[in-house]
Length: 509
Image: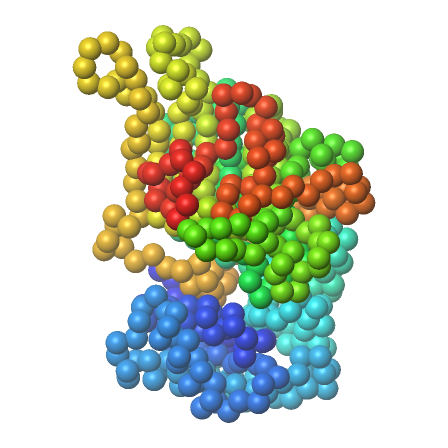
């Protein structure tokens, strides 16, 4: 693997939870595998007043808890911690960016990092326009000597208008090649394996079209509620929080055309084409193609669970959706007429993200006397999390007299590769940015195209009070009315369990 060039990773918001739980532990995992450059440093920025010693002590605790490679060599851990530095800094004060420039110059000279900087904005979204502007004013975005890259966390905008505005503002100060819009879903090994499954196997790609696929189903389920994030979630909801970014991204990877090369430009071109091919859902059509729900009080395993409106920070009459399901179409040659069903929700029976390819049934039912097989299609299940793997479902004869058929599973689990190290999403994405590889990051035009598709749904839900918010008891698979999106009587959503091969039941885990 190529080694990144010497550089400093500058983390805005370094006193926050993301840095403590994800970023610094992920970089430590890279360090443990000798994937960092010889000359490297992390500069944490935050309003909290910390010394380098304080910052290192705090990050040491985070590494011990959250790193995939638990530190067993105290000397190596201490060597890594010596690369961590902290600078007390108010991101909202323009005058302090001059001090930051001086600090970076001083650290760059001391560490020999060749004026290469990666800026990670682990901050609230209201800082996404302020920080790049102030960096540019101090010439800290100038690549005439050394590279400068900017990592932007989600949410990237609140709707189409704000996403377009944010893109416009960022491009005033950084060019598109410098901007890395991060989505941790793209860092998951199983998401990347979608490309390999499709394009390296002659048995799948010839069938990957409207002639052989009946429909595609994508689920992103969580078995927890909003907890103490009710105030934030009130302004977000399931559509913004999960579908606009994570699940539409999975749609793009499932539906994209084969790229001419496996590189950043070609892969991102094909994903953008899918988003531009999404059939628009007009505001007056939203009730037909989109369902929203909100979890209500229930009992799970004998314990009482709050409803969403009872959570801290949530309005008593809230209409924010904790569950959303959409039926969409992709208007291009490959997918014409094939429905895609996507759903996401909180307080569902289990935590799972998966893609299900439902193949068309045989044109003539030779075993029509067996209703159990007639009403089931061959399925390819690609499990993103947990119990990552791939499952193929097909019919087999039951031993004995006659032709009794039942569905069986043939599955592969990533956990079977016990000698193979699976990097965390942030580990993979941070390394890619260090290498200058933007393949697994969002491009501006694709982000806007995704918002363009979602925007009419958001507007209809906001403006049309006749569109209901369906209640569903916590611990169930969402509102029963979501089954109506799938119009055929013998088809319903797949009800997955935590374990990949245990499926087809309402399992509460």
